[in-house]
Image 1 (cartoon, rainbow, N blue to C red):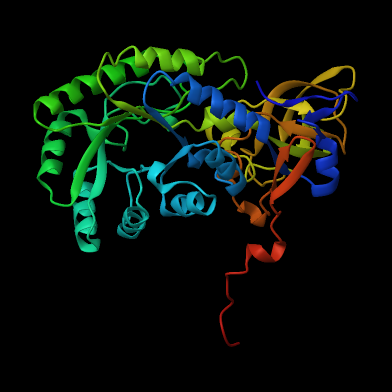
Image 2: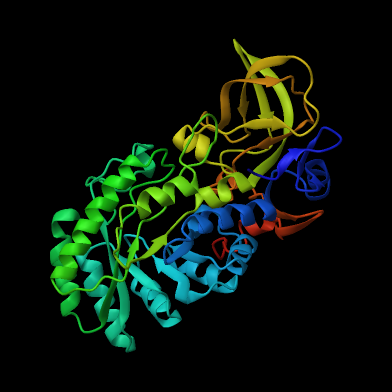
Length: 418
């Protein structure tokens, strides 16, 4: 469920705010998020785990706007980060560092130091070399680093290959065959404290079977480690639960949680989860305007003012996003390609899509754009990134101003002299 709906005038609204009003006052393209939807999605996901000790750590990479992070922090969320910049964002948004887990295969010494000084919950170790680096950094600053090992279970998540992370050919985690030795090495280190085990097999997961396979392997390893005298306090099951973009039918949070909880038995493990897309994906849309329509050969094009630099998923993954008219749809329909102004043939939002008749000046929305929308935006073609708006009931707040043209090159310099 989300709070984007047709209002009493037949036009698209976000909660109690007409999207046309936002377009008129803020401009396009603009990302629009719904606080009510964010709140509902987080609370439903959190409640699904209520039968066990747990912590829901929102995956910041999905959408890292400070206002979004602040809404989730107020709800009690923890955070899954993958960079020092994301740590800084979480702290600036009022997040509790003691509820932060730090993932990623290439953490720098400076990033690790910042995380350990902040007092985060756990560093998810992704290589033997990183384990030694953590020991060195923790020793130098005089702290004990809480760690879990991210184990690669070699499980096929049955998702897009670019967002599969749990196969042995992927760069993530430590090979299953090396996990026990890695934990033994961690136990020997003076400045490392082993607190958990972590896995994450991929994103946009549409069935529970791969997760069951991964958690069963993880529990088997935990039992072995405990028998080795290595207490494991939490199991981080990652994130990746899918959402409906088109006709997908992923498990509900309740089904997802029940399925995994059933595998735990009576083991006194705290469960850490890292949802991102399932919290914010359908809590956001991207507003855009049709600039013009044209026909080339056999193809009709709807050219909009947003481009692949604003929303990359269709170009990167050939991902499907719903597209709707903000106004009352005109009668009749046409098969069109919806494309942007970027000078790439990959700059499209839909191909061969049947849509109502669209004319220049019409407002459109790209649905399910909250996750990996603005977060992946760039200045390609020297285009300004979109504004971001958070709707709260009958009010909206501009939570990121649209960039000025001068900001595109404010940090650059021409050569001195003639």
